[in-house]
Image: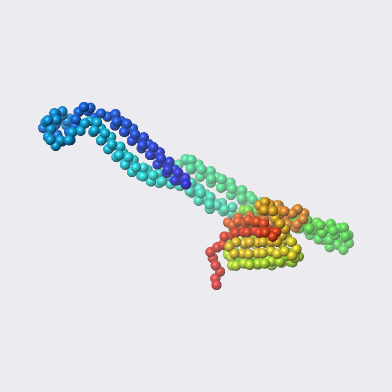
Length: 380
């Protein structure tokens, strides 16, 4: 039941209670009325027997015409009270219907500012915080609520701007030292006089440096997707899948993993870079966490489903895989950074989609990503 319906019901209920109380009070006062105890009233009395001042006179029954109907005071009182009661009930029901209609209209006008707040909140995105309510009206509670909401949006917009500047600066400041370190290590390893111990140490440092670069790239990508989409364009998801499968071909060959791809034309309105990262992370995870001679199934129909044949995954551990840095294996045992599925979920949410996973029956994981498909179709 909506708030408007509840308010209307309250208005109508209060009106009915007040109306019933008023009818009860009138009925009680009418019950105290005594229309001339012991006096008979005639429905038709000859004009010459009527008192010109009061309209009534006391006459003997023998003086009345034979067709005159005579009522006692108690009969008149009972008839009057019965008539007043039923007419009051009918009037109350009619007024109650009008009260419900008026209550509905008044509740709608009172709640109109709340609808404005809700509509504004639905239009907001991380990259579009320029919407404001700017409610006009007297300084009442709803005006105060709208102004508070506008103030909160101002603070959020400022916070998101600061975050975007931080991510842009961090992207440069964190990448540059790692690039310099990698170059120095490669130069040292290129020295013909370098000993075997230095070469082993250099190879270890290069591997650590590469892992750090991947971790920073993943964190920056996660931060970017969490902020929402800055721009949108039409992207054929099936083409993105084909490109990413080709990019993962070398890694799959190294791990002795085969791909089985089945797609259809699927158009998405979104960010092509983020969508490529989503698909790429799914495929790389499916290859890295697989077994030698295993396979990766990629199917795109109503949703994107990626299935691998890796080790058995406990059902209770699946939700934790979408958290950053959560993996089933020990961190030092894989080349991943533990951000793959976190990025997949974040990118899916940025595109108004969702991502979920479940264990594969024969071992491995099934990841399902739902991305809203646009109604646009490629010209034939």
